[in-house]
Image (cartoon, rainbow, N blue to C red; front, side, top):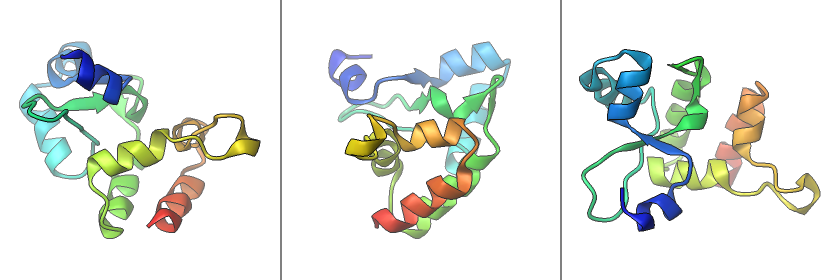
Length: 119
């Protein structure tokens, strides 16, 4: 990965790493991405999809990711825009917290509401 992509998408992992760690065929990871069950991003000019680590729990995709991706797509957001929205600070009073923090806390409905409100 080049440093530009690393800086643009911190905390993301290549499919090969995920496949090895989760003992899953890389082709299945691609199927999950195309099917809206995983978020994946890539830098300009890159052919390598990278997957945000926060969408996994115990080596498997969080069940809420498919719903979050579906809502984002309904709102016209692509995966890069969704990544940006999920990782942006929520506001001054939230002390740097993000939608990722809410997701990890199990507050899926609040994440979905924020995605709907952002469009």
